[in-house]
Image (cartoon, rainbow, N blue to C red; front, side):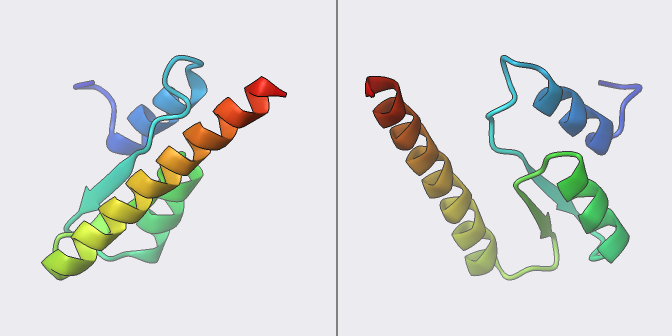
Amino acid sequence: LKDKNSFEFCTELKNNPLTKDITIILFSSENNEALRIRGFESGATDFIFSAMNEKEILARIKIAFNTRQTQIKMQKELEKV
């Protein structure tokens, strides 16, 4: 990890069959459009900035968690078919 930036690490996780489905939320002190796009292109689920209000950060984390739980439930249902 020491030779990789967060975007490279995110891409590596998403390209690995064992970790491709994990939720990745990137945190940054910069609210920069280019960084956000790079984060999403690398596979991040969301991009949170340190200047965001605590309630918004918690809401975004909750949404990401609920979305992943829904995906897992849907996948299990599809496997039954």
